[in-house]
Length: 182
Image 1: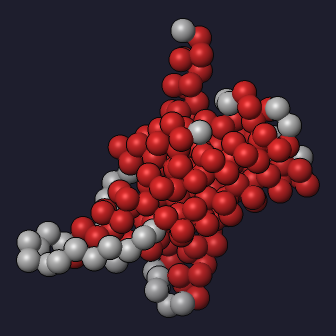
Image 2: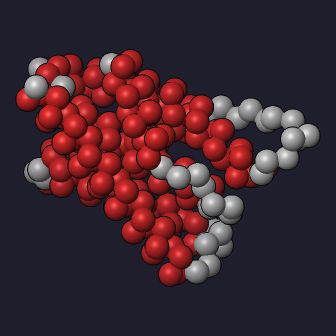
Image 3: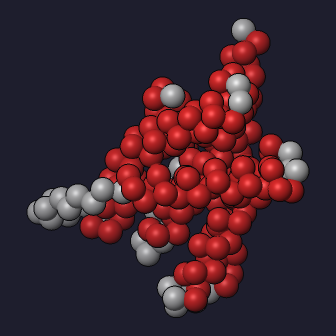
């Protein structure tokens, strides 16, 4: 699962843009949604996920752990660039984002598994539902805390990252299916 986590992290890293100034918190949520969307799609194609609940849980935990470790590094680097800019004489500040990324991915997978079991959603519907719900909740919290005041910008953020999560999921699925057929 280490390779899966690294693949997921690199796949998303190559495709997401850097955060805009002032959007770092929303950006990190959007990135976590993209990581979840890709990881979910990759795990759906893993054989050991279909070998029972215990094997499924172990595969998810291992993939989430690996993806979180790999992604936390580049998320930190990109957020730091947005916050500090490109000033040469600013000393680096290290913040370990691994626990936060892992927590967010765990929440996403727990919600996906919940709606699969309780609501009978199809796999792709559960993945989409989670992406939409997490983005909506993040925006709602930012609005309640007064950090986002423009409803149009909030809606644009949600649309942009939801579409990106959907596109990344589709792209990785097509890549996996092509590789399976060769």
